Image (cartoon, rainbow, N blue to C red; front, side, top):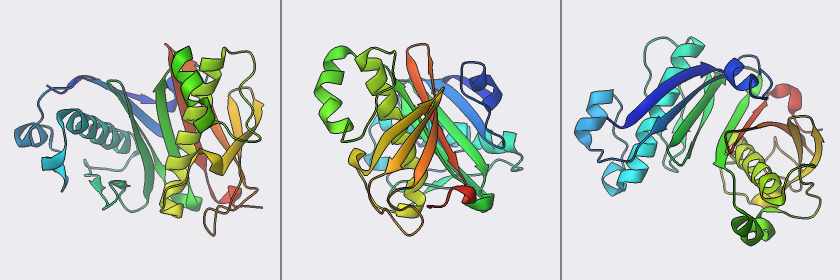
Length: 240
């Protein structure tokens, strides 16, 4: 067995830990362990084999399987009907079924998927991170933080930096379907905090929809030494 636990939960369960309930967003989280994952394992769980499967190490295969199982369960919870396969594009990003959007993330034996209907141009980005230690935070700060970034007040530096990192990762995953190219941490600055919501302002034009000056909210919570970040934006948040 690849999954030790597969626990479907609505976003209400995350809300109990501090993340506000975002209407229409369905999440499933799983714990998994890294074991030998072969074609028979994929067939057992009913997950299609990606084109680059033979080149994946076991850790990546385990992450892929856990993430796709979470995504399938989240789509079922959202009312998408029969189990749906989530294939991979050439850039390895998930191909969501028509009418749906979503995001998948992995972290140290955890997988998490968030899905929602793609009405009003909705985009989702989800991320989970273990808290950094002080040494890692000191080493990575210069890469993650840029002019204008504000760290979450009241937390140790390593915790605040993990929150900033996770928020920027969620932003990247959420906007990538529109941008279709890599962009770095410097593309957005954290300009404001309101309780558990961080506001990130784009520092550059990323594409026709997401332009310099756009301000996007990312919901974050801290639970069990992990940071959870979720961005959900729709047509009402087109650039100003």
